[in-house]
Image 1 (tube, rainbow, N blue to C red):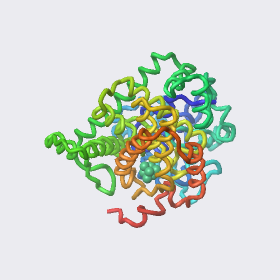
Image 2: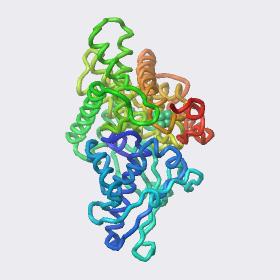
Image 3: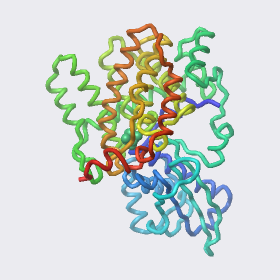
Image 4: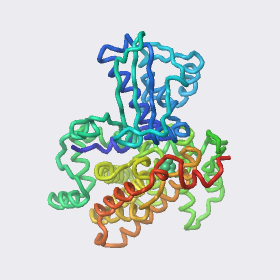
Length: 456
Ligand code: SF4
């Protein structure tokens, strides 16, 4: 019952893993299931209903666009960002959808894509229902899915019985908590990255895991570079100007040696990724899109500023950061709609702090300590995106999260790993805090900055 690090880090497309990638994956899955059951050829009409958080912030998070692309059979991993606008223009102009590229049906967005912000499905705030009809209006198939954050989706059945879903890979060293992770590593005399790499062997051979992780690092770097090269305003009513390109130019031109300029670089790396994400670009979900800038920014910091940094360190970083992400996914949540921004930026900060200590050859106990610090000081962080866009506070919050992760790693590296609050205790606290948090602070844009700051 273990995930792979490649479930936690995956190639994605902006602006949201829960509101863009998850719905795209669910829409595609529904159409493929429809085809597999033999009903696609009889389908003449298809409706999609979005509930609660998906409906309340879905327009700003491009959920509508994601649904159309998913119904056409496209995936976040393989979709060319440059093909998005032409595809949507074709669908909307012609008023037709090509379901999985196999069956063309009429599609009237106002009638067939429905937003139920005042209703929720029982399993999760990010619920959606797809229904296919034949020519006489008979229901051929109707399925409900939930988008769980990080691009993960589950049917109602899978949500109720997660062990029966796809996460059933048997790994060599299964762990369910931070304490177990430390104990197993100690018993077998392993560093955490070695333990995680051994587990990954259940999914693919070691050379393929290493290659996949280095490819993800390469995509993260490309995303940073693209963000530095881009110009202008981000999409949406806020008319937010990109800041990363100017900051990058200033840093390159001044070439100053001030110690705090390192912070400027980290800020630039994080802003760049999240501006690309907000623009619907290609990035690595880590563990979500809203928080996708933190891991790349801390990794880029490691490669640029830490003496002796290497690809081996990058691998240790991603293996250990991925394992920490699995603990949050399993024992709490990585969904802003379920747990607020502590579940996105907080988790990414915790993962990056742990990953950095691993890259710097810290002990297993120091890694656990860093992960704990990274979350402890994000507890209670709300999700209140203005106008439902993944821009304010999201973009800047990644810069803050990356700096915080580096500081958490430094605090942990200055100690011997012993500390009062364990990672498991802070994860349990985060889960409970998320449950207690009012829904207005959980990706609904009904509270916080979203209601106190005018949209334009
Ligand atoms: S506020 Fe945080 S959780 Fe909410 S959309 Fe932005 S990054 Fe995601």
